Image 1 (cartoon, rainbow, N blue to C red):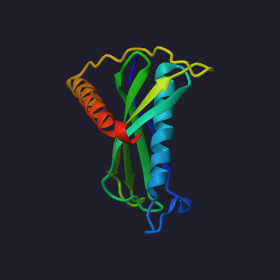
Image 2 (image 1 turned 90 degrees about the vertical axis):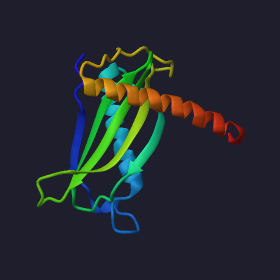
Image 3 (image 1 turned 60 degrees about the vertical axis):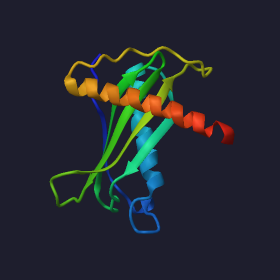
Length: 155
């Protein structure tokens, strides 16, 4: 199965503004979830739900009126889970190049109409870059386990 990135592009709008005059982080998180959902559902062929969003890193603000590009791509699959790498870029309409603004990993699980987990096609990394992305996802899984252990007394 081919693992092409899902890409959304659009212009950030005044309705996305925060108190500082830039795009609200919540808007960016919504775009991340939408692109991740499109990627996971395309990969699995089934409805998919978000089960984890981690390490959202906002590098720079996105200005109102900039072109935004959100790219989502599978970087690891479990039996029913899909780890999706999301990168958010933006550029001024007068500039040719995009700058990376945000990055995160989001995990989706494919489910049936009753919410029961469904198996997903296995993603097999082919290039060295793909293998590095898969290792990145595995390291983050280990870190999530440690974080969850730390959080247990507070849940």
